[in-house]
Amino acid sequence: MKALPKSLWAATASPALSYPRLDGDALADCVVVGGGFTGLSTALHLATRDLKVVLVEANEPGWGASGRNGGQVIPGLKLDPAELRAKLGEERGRRLTATVGATADLVFHLIEHHGIDCNARRSGWIQGAPGPKGFAEVRQRAEEWAALGADVAVLDRDEVRARIGGGDYVGAFLDRRGGTINPLSYARGLARAAAAAGASIHGDSPAIALERVGQRWKLSTPSGSVTASHAVLCTNGYTDRLWPGLAETVVPLLSSVVATEPLSDNLRQVILPGREGVSETRRVLNWFGIDRDGRLIFGGRASQRETEAAQAFSPVLARLRDLLPILGEPRIQFRWAGYVALTTDHVPHLNELAPNLYAGLGYNGRGVAMSTMMGKLLAERVAGAKPEDIALPVTPIERIPFHGWRATGIALAIGWKRLQDRLNP
Ligand SMILES: Cc1cc2nc3c(=O)[nH]c(=O)nc-3n(C[C@H](O)[C@H](O)[C@H](O)COP(=O)(O)OP(=O)(O)OC[C@H]3O[C@@H](n4cnc5c(N)ncnc54)[C@H](O)[C@@H]3O)c2cc1C
Image (cartoon, rainbow, N blue to C red):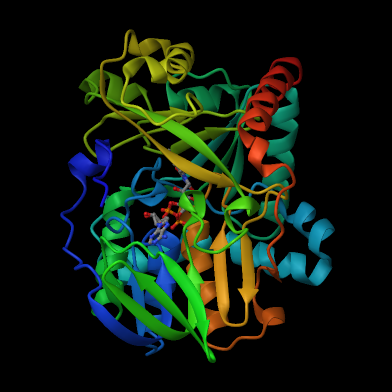
């Protein structure tokens, strides 16, 4: 079992319960692989329907991206409502829009309903636009969501500067449905809630084989097995070879984060006094926020190799200095990284891999709220909802061509996107 990275969240999250290794053979209605938000939400929603669910996690709940992210609860997808309608047709597009518009509501509802202690603040989410293209995009986004009754607004240059205490944005989208959490505390809270509802959760239990036995699925770990009528794979950017082809449906991308020492009181009054989460319309974007104790958390793209070496984080630090010069030379307390999973169609995938075998993944770096919703949708499908009644399309897996060349592809794509960011911000 791998330890948690030495992240801010590992140092400040509410304590973990211990979830024993799966030992011996179990029977269930559904076995879930992966203890991030997707798997934990699936388990919670199944258990509250009185289904017997067993979840196996290779490490501990929240070990993957769910315990490493920026903690920004962002409703919606990268595609806006009109784009979803164009892609899926009027009716399905509208239904998916309603569902993705409600993802932050679901997160904050679960936190309240299950009493999850995770420093949740519904303080809003800002998406800064560095130039005319980005500003046109956020104005369009705000218009579309406002027409649907969402609590959103456009900020002009002075307004966004006043909220952030710096930045190079000509304007921004403000989504008051969003907010921030301590993500590892949230993952641990979801695990506790799922266990309290009757789910069996096992850490240190990597799934190493999955086979069809009669009408059921048998999932094996080194010290046990679960035989269940349904199985759900929730391994996102950490997907391994358990099911052939699943890893090739997404591009895993390492995202790096630094957190400063707690800022002085003076700086806290200037930098994000409202404690919103911030991201950007840039194609290669950075994001930031403030934690419970006033540390600035700043993330983005750096190395594609996981390492604690300070040097590997220098692209993120350079951007931080650029964006918030008021900080001076930031004193960094934590550095860590984690894998996001990108899809080529920019929409998360709910795959049906074989009869009664599902996967939910591919949140494109925006999965805190969406993965929680994905778990709810997966539970609906397992509990018998028809594919056409699920808000996301239920699709077979589609491997990305030339996936083996992804390292070269990522480097080329990022170089190209950075150039576009400079030419057409
Ligand atoms: C640095 C970073 C910052 C981010 N910031 C944000 C943000 O601010 N807002 C936002 O909305 N999104 C953000 N994201 C994305 C978000 O964290 C993810 O979309 C979300 O956590 C995905 O959850 P998940 O449960 O699908 O996957 P994960 O949390 O990655 O969980 C997958 C789990 O599967 C387990 N696993 C894999 N294989 C096996 C196996 N064979 N057997 C058993 N277990 C297995 C792994 O151990 C892992 O714990 C960020 C991601 C990163 C990495």
